[in-house]
Image 1: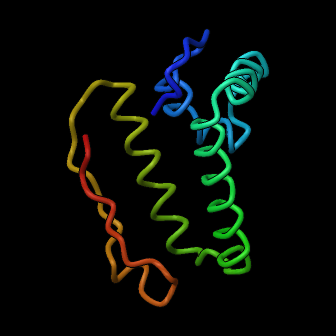
Image 2: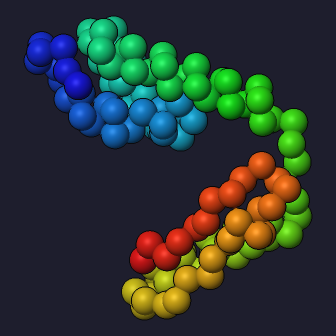
Length: 115
């Protein structure tokens, strides 16, 4: 996606970091670069607005559901497992959070091995 005009920050780079921007997970200097880009590039601004609207809709629709403690524990354990494997550089089997684990909680996806 691009408007065809040259920018200090390329459209691809902006879109690669769009969710970090939406989630306020970027340094202020990087946020400022994206804001400038959105002012210059209407296709990227449109994509930003669409993703922002989707995020707000999901929050409104799903924001009142509490995460079950057992599912939260499994996901956090999986994150810790991935992080420790990355630190040590070892490749280990990955625990899965299955559809059965999430049954009745509005999610039916499986976290598959991606190491």
